[in-house]
Image (cartoon, rainbow, N blue to C red):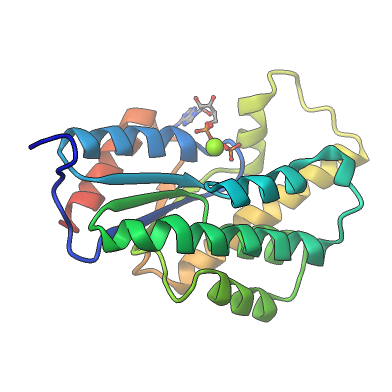
Length: 215
Ligand SMILES: Nc1ncnc2c1ncn2[C@@H]1O[C@H](COP(=O)(O)OP(=O)(O)OP(=O)(O)O)[C@@H](O)[C@H]1O
Ligand SMILES: [Mg+2]
């Protein structure tokens, strides 16, 4: 095979990776992408929010600490705007070219964070997710399930300092985690729930096995 040739999958394969911060999404996207490209598949790797020039500009607005006053509804719409651009510009063309599209977060993140986390109306979110994803849905979604406390332990070796704000933050992540589990329960066919406290290589092996079933 030449450089531009790859094993085409009819209709492509769209896989999303979900879970709270530090659950291990990016680690596994990287491992899966190198296994698949080693096996000769065409790969598109994207992250949300971002992934295209326009989407990265929206990401910068979303993540800018100066924008602390952003209304939750404005935040929701910016995520959807970034997603719509990414979907049209990279995800749909990647699928059409018969590639495996690996997406580090997709619309389930919005349902979990803005819906279950921030408490915005779930029906409205579902409608906006539908619009922004331009009629497509991940073929498979890996949810890395991790308790909020375990996630916190991954980024802070300092013992938990539980003032009111810390407690609020951890509570937010608990709601997001439970929200993800509810979403997965509603779509058991699409979701594979992974114990994120398992060993990195074991998780990678499980994911690879699940993905290979689709070829
Ligand atoms: N299964 C695992 N067990 C223990 N540590 C892990 C595991 N997977 C990832 N880590 C570690 O946890 C940290 C966060 O991992 P990673 O960046 O992949 O998470 P993420 O879900 O992409 O986070 P974010 O949402 O913040 O981008 C890293 O230091 C990584 O090495
Ligand atoms: Mg990441």
